[in-house]
Image (cartoon, rainbow, N blue to C red; front, side):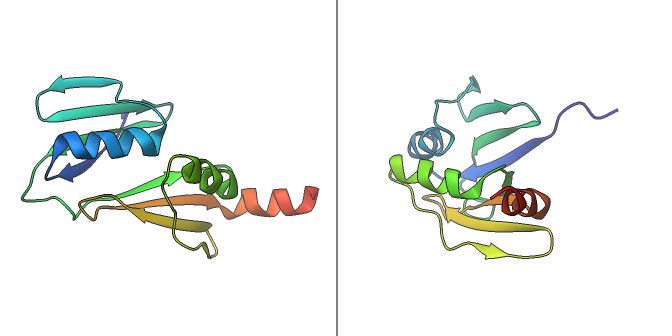
Length: 120
């Protein structure tokens, strides 16, 4: 049985990336288990930031959120800007890239968007 999944993001400069991801997630890493690794834990998974210059810039991470507009506003307070929102059958998404060019996609499932529209 799978109990947790880690998404791994490779970076060329760990200290710079740690600072950026701390802003993205709104907190410093939960654990720094090795010199080349930082980890953030969430209810349904975890993110490992790994010093790996060879793979840096090729990682992709999708973060499921309940309110994309609220996330966009929160990111602005942290001096981070999400790209434009795009809708699809599954979700509305917006993306941002870290200093290495790794892609982070925030996705609000369509069922949440539809439920919010019905209550408005």
